[in-house]
Image: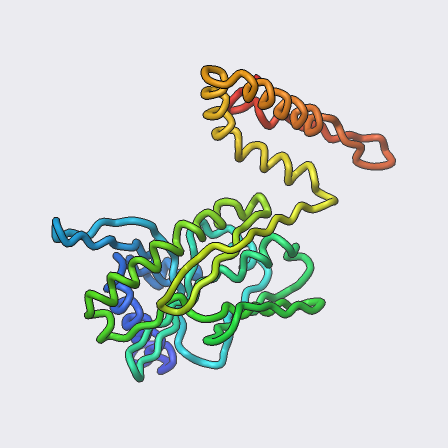
Length: 288
């Protein structure tokens, strides 16, 4: 309505602007206009500082959803869950505190386990909570799943954002985290991810992995895995055919075995109807 606006909306806008300003000390930030906002506030691209050339270079990109510090968690239901699962870049929740001009970046890494272990039909709502201390954790009941994201990857204020020593260290932290999480985003559809550990403004490391094949959809999962590795197999095949005949023969044996298993028709039910699988190694590459 002309001449007035809800105060809470105004405060939210101010916090988002502050968060963007702080994040710009580390990344190029493209705010998403309100009319184009479908759940994300900004797309950011990490900037690598180069002291010799006195330039900054664009590297990995990521999504950010800014949130005012409050007791209210983030809630995702229905189609929002599929949207969240299918995001193609690493996601951060940026918590903004205006009282001390602080931005805390919480990675959404803790959602990966939910995405590959659970079917969204198993619950109606996903609750995402921020937590400053302790490991990420999850609580699941019949209709609701709660995920605590753990401690933030980065926490910094305006003074630190102006300190080149701190921003150089923050760049190294993001540079360590983003490629690992991007691999998780890419392999999420294969029901595979690697655990990432971090301490706020500290070390990032990869520790262990999780694979979750579905017994009732085993061929679906294996088919997707085969399609994803075809480019790599083509590279190995080219090397093997020219340098290693033993490897070439073993590769052919593996591919033929998977091909035979995956293309065998399956009975769908008592009606004797069948599902016929295509050859996952045939297109767009052919390994023979």
